[in-house]
Image (cartoon, rainbow, N blue to C red; front, side):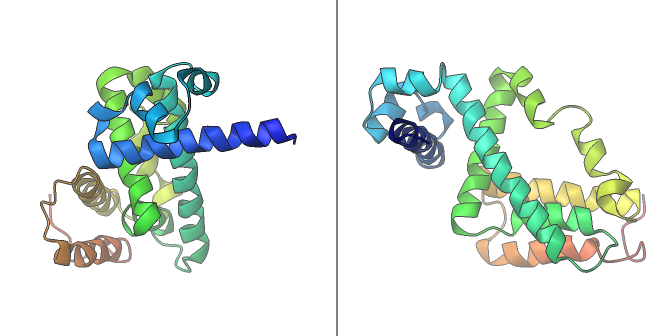
Amino acid sequence: MTKITKKGQKTKQAILQAAKMILLNDGIGALSVEAVCTAVGVSKGSFFYHFKTREELLKGLLVSLTEHQTHLFEKFSAEDQTEYGRGLRSYIRATLSLKGKDRDNARATCRCMIEMLLTRTDMLDDFGVKPGFYKHLLSEEITNGLSPKQALLALLACEGLWYDQSLGVQGIHPGKIQPAIDAIIEMTYAKDEGLPKF
């Protein structure tokens, strides 16, 4: 790798990091080419060398963030010794059991996805976020033997808590978040007994 390529890669990463911080601190409405250039201290020409449009920046940010989430999923899956419900549990842990940088990445991912849902749904196809996405999360491959009812309850609880935390709604008292996460994960160990009847 040449020195120029290393410098270019550092600039691209700095642009992605600045975009993430703008999303987290100021919201999606504040994310503009100008704001990112100012935060990084680069010219618009440098920005456009790496990303042709704001949408391409969002896509690049989402790629970076989802790669990180995938790594966390694989890590949690490898550490989980119980096959029953392992895939869904790993998804829940990768989505909710996050602190510091991992939590910021999850929040930024959520905000990117919402922006894309509102403006460019076609861009989400590249990330598997399409009508069959949740069907895949509820498949035998992911649920590892959980009943469909059990898996659906855990997934809906996980997604609700993720959106609550990612968007800063804070509908749940901060002291109740970890017990809520623990309860959702516990649902993936239990058999059908004690679950609500539909």
